[in-house]
Length: 520
Image (cartoon, rainbow, N blue to C red; front, side, top):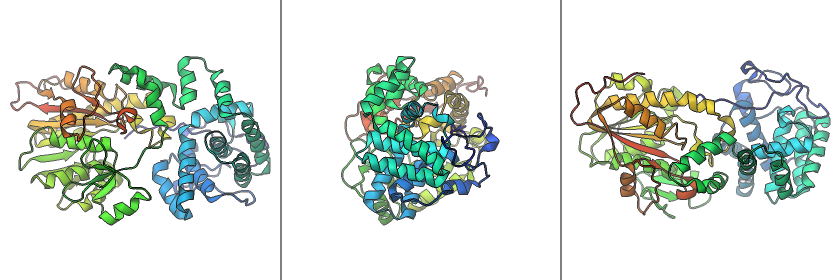
């Protein structure tokens, strides 16, 4: 329900065009999704497996092959790199060193795509969007190697040219070779100066330097400025482009956190190194990967007030189930009943799977969260609303998201977020608490939603979420002040995703006409 839009490059025309140019008409319609670079329809599953090899087979190092195929799946199928990369590495049977290289190449290229496209456009003497998508992905991959890694220039160029020859033919490979030779002749600093010289504003210049769209930069600046910390913008953008550490959660009562411990959530610790899936498998699912910010949100809901035996809890937007499992493990230690809701059946199955490691039964509903409150009015004591959002707070882990989203996504998501939060408040029992959370710092998705919902309610009081987070945290935590009790976590300040949290409590005694002003 995210309303996500794709900004994928235009589909290609003839294979082997000597300049790597797309011959398809520009401004292709949504109906052209699912076509190969030659215009032949493909199934979605075929796209996920990567591009079709059309030219002679050339020698390409396995890690580069995996990274390239991930880029193609992201471009052609709107795939998520963090979901498909592990299986691609396993299928290719990469050793740990090659797996690390494939991860760096794929994630690094996706993070800095906007910057690399500007460089490629300059070197190719035409806009990147006019280059065949399969060729463009190879050029992006090579540009990352040339300008941001220690990979030898000849290896980056030769293997990327081989990739282009394989998928698009010799003519396109000659074009790719010329572009990459041009890029390799200048240093990263020289290219930075060149592309920034073309910027029309300071924000556009910062966008090229930091590889963030201008609209995202402005949204992040406004969110920091609300705390009086706009001067932290450069640190935040830098943190967005750094590879995040893997954080694990030990479900309380079922597992103990290992070392190194994370500073804030008592359930969180860093991956000891190597493949975290081994630790997860050995734990039987009582240890799993989860950002510390997500853990703090769930812990805050449980710790907002003393838990009474017999309480009834709900995770309203539960998929894929990580926070649900953490809440379930807390609930079982307090004789509390937890229920979950996820409207998408496939994601509801993920929730049920996430709960398998936690003893006891959790009912998983598959209802529209916007109407859930009307059908379950006044029955839950604690509700988590981890609302669908733009995900601008998780750009470290989902590097392609910054290029997929647009301000139009915010406009589409905010009404949904308002409806979900309103529905959750309707489902609260007197005295009950809702935790409204988003993995986005965009003010329209955070403070704006809370203010819009509170404007129509006289039965709701906002709690001091800052005090609650400070109370559940193992160490002092530096939380900004915006005049409210809401919490905004930050990658550069806390080492977490940019999670937002507000805690709202329903009055113990319902005032007369409390919901009279409720609308849509």
